[in-house]
Length: 276
Length: 258
Image (tube, rainbow over all chains, first blue to last red; front, side, top):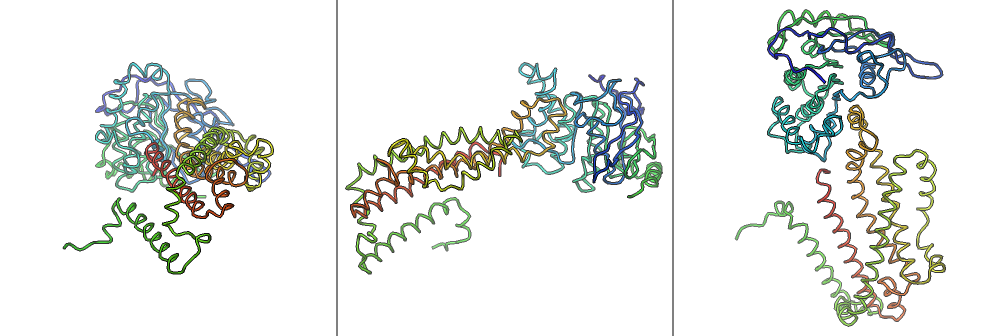
């Protein structure tokens, strides 16, 4: 389990522990296509330390989502290895939180119960669910108030807007204090203004847990705003062609987004995006 | 006197009851007048008034046969739900079962069940058994298909969320598969209940010793057409009540499906 959160007003985004949590070792992905093997991803090598937030950006179809699925253990890496604390990831770890572009809240549960779902599945929370239910409810309510959904805890998904559902989905991804948060274009379906609001909320949520964050996004500004490092991927067969380290202090705000430094990072990254 | 706003009335809940009710009354009135004015013989088309008196005169027989149709329908329906749900889950979860059984089921389903009743009567006699079986045979397939369809439509990302947390197949079924399929099951229940009802009546009209279908056949053989019509109207009423009951249950249980 994760260390207690660091002081959220601290401007140092690096964690104390410097051993990598995740290592990518010559990771690749290919599938058969018209008789031969088509390589989607090749020779991805990198490491992520605890508490780091990284983004992967690049043109569509370059396999960014596949990377996420490999880290989650849903589709383990067929070529090369992704290691979690030195152990190869072969199946889902239960200390991962994941949020997709589609919030996929369970429509038969209200917001509160949706957020509490991981606590019913992940040991050790699962075992104590009966006794500690009140505590778990408080945990969920706590997260919901961080994203200003505390008044909607009894509502059902159809009664919430897209942005609200996504906020609930993010709470669900973090309630079990995961060590890794995986985000697959979580704000892709939202309008630009809602998206900016969501960055701030995601940052607030993440800073409470300070786990590793891996974000897949098309939005370069989003990547710069949220990340410690941004990796640019090439078109297929994808590999990492550029890495930008973001040295902006946390917590970041929308004012920083308008600064020259921010734009400098944005331009550097943009220059390295090639299309198919 | 305040003016009546049709548009506003159409949006009220009462409109759903009042309008068909008025239409039914009008239908009977026109029917009665047509029989009188056009001098239609009663063994062709009885007037609603003679149907009503047949209902009163033959009330015990109508009641007894209605109950027979009702319980054979319900028994066949309950069996169909049990078999249909299990079969649907097997088809939905196992590719082997799907590929092997589904085409056979479709082929079987296209056989008009009325054609099977004489055979069932030879095997089990002209009694309640063929009625229950026919009701079952008509009703189980829509349930099985809907359950299989329900399982097929679970969003993969929903399952991924649970899988990524380390949930087992059973847990995923409990928390996602089953609740997701419930609306599909309930949607099929009202259809299946109607089909079971039709199956029971068909069977009764071909080979039975009781039931409203049997009564209609007997009554027309005796040229007692008003009684036959009385039975028909009772069938219609029963059918509507049955269907409405399942619509009500569906609304209560599946509160999240719109």
